[in-house]
Every structure is written in C-alpha cells, then in structure tokens.
Length: 345
Image (tube, rainbow, N blue to C red; front, side, top):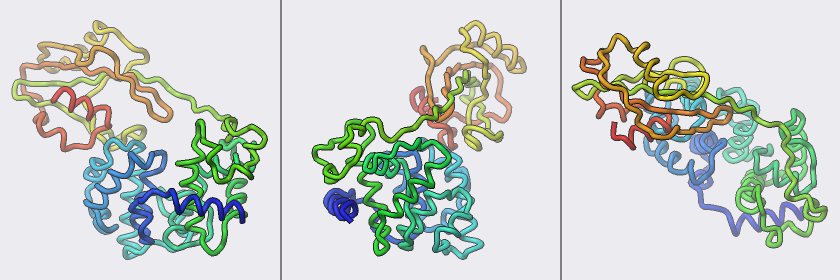
C-alpha cells in the first residue's frame, strides 16, 4: 500500500487539470486516448478541444465527412488513428445507438482500440479494475521494481500488466491508473528524473541499485527507411495547380499531395529537371525552379523523408486544376501544409 498511498498523495497535489479527467463520459475519454497515443499532452490538447467543438457527440463524429476529420487531425500524425476513430464512431453510433461497450473485453472488439485504449476507457469511464500500461507505466514500474525485462519483447506487456494489477487497489482503479501515468509523465521522466524530490525514493529499487538511468530496457531498434520525394507544384497562368489524393496504402492514406517523383537517392537539380520534363511532357512547361534551397527532412516512425518542392510553370490551363487559394481546404500531410503556408501557394 505504500506505493499506492504515496502515488495518490503525489497525484492529488500535482495532477494537471485536463478536460477528459473531469468526466466519466466514454466519448471524450476515448477521443483523448486515441489522440494521445504517441503524442504529448501539450500537442494533443488543442486538437482534442477542436474535435470536441466540431463533434460534441459520437453521432456528430460519425456523420462527418472523412476529409473534415482528416483536416482537423492535420499535423497530429499517425493518420490511421483518425481513420479508425471515424470508422469506430460510425459503428458506435449506428450499431450501438451511441452507447459505448462498458467493459474491457467488448471495447477490444472495436476498430483502432487495442489493449491500452480499451483498458483506459474501461477504467476511466466504468471504473473497471484493469491496468493501463503505456510507456509511462512501463518506465515507473521498471524503475520502482528494478525490472530488467526488455519492454519491446513479446512477453513484456503481460508481465508489466500483472505487476500493475498487483499494485492496483480494487476500490479505485481509475485514480490509480491516472496517477501512475501522470507520475511517469511529470516526475519519473525518461531522462534525468529528479529522484531526490521523488515521493517513492525511499522504496525505489532502481534508485537503491543505481540503475535508474538504464531503465526501462528497450533493445529493439526501429529500422528507418530513407525516401527521396520531389513534389511538382504545377502553376498555370490562372493560378491553378494540381493535387492528388493518396489512395494507396502506406503513409498519408487519403490525404492530399502534389504530384511527385520519388527516386532511390537524392538527385541534383539537373537530374530532377530532366525527370520532370520527361514525366510531364504533356504540359507546355516554361520553367522549373526549386522552392527550397536545402532538402526538407521529415521524420516518421519508420521512415525518413528527404523532400524537395519544384515550381513548374506551364503556359496552358491545367486539366482538373484547382485554384491555389482553395487548396488549404483539403487535408495535407503537415510537411506539405507547412510548405503551402510558407510559400503562400
């Protein structure tokens, strides 16, 4: 009980006032948990507020157009989360009459809801005694109990869930889960935690053994693929351009982009110019001018994108072109949207 009592005392004094903590309504809780996967609270909070304003109920989200959902999500990354969330909203609205399943097992059956999210909703909305194990919880438990299990291993989730279950009080699981997650986010941080001011320092095994900086252990390295993308910004005399919707599976599914030429390595201007003239020979090209002077690097979880943009002036009307002042209405990957903003396309 020392662990829980100390943790709860710290939490009640230090917890952040976050809107999804002031309710047991599963809709905003679910929304926040999907948004905060691999996203910091400071970044996710404005998106949460925008979504709640645009879609105050699950019915509003269900009847929204996917492009509207993706546009509001723009910049948050991992866009499959938004698409899955939208699909799940439709299921809850149309098949469950807007009522969320009230337990961990049934929540797991919904698209885009894994063990962590199901546990969070079941715990925070319905006070079910199921541990929520995210990166913060891995870190707190690994250090407090001095656990050297590789958290990237297949067995780690089960082991840490069982450890959390042992520490969790049955009478207030929601508050326990909130407290341990908040403790990992604010106190037991990844680098240079202030152990001297920690309420658990007298019983933390890692602190006693001098292993705090080594835990948790994560051995699996993510293999990063380099990709080289050249975006072609066609511009005609009427200030129209061309954008395409990415319909193939992979990054940025159902978002918009300019036509692009992807190469195996980074190429110089002359080489790219040659490819543009070759691939867009049906247009009367007058000029090819690079927008950015140095390559833009955009990092995703498994990919490192090397991006260049080229202004390609044509002296004919672009078939199916769209006015440049209209393109901001469409959902773009944030790296392209930032380019449009910077150069006032």
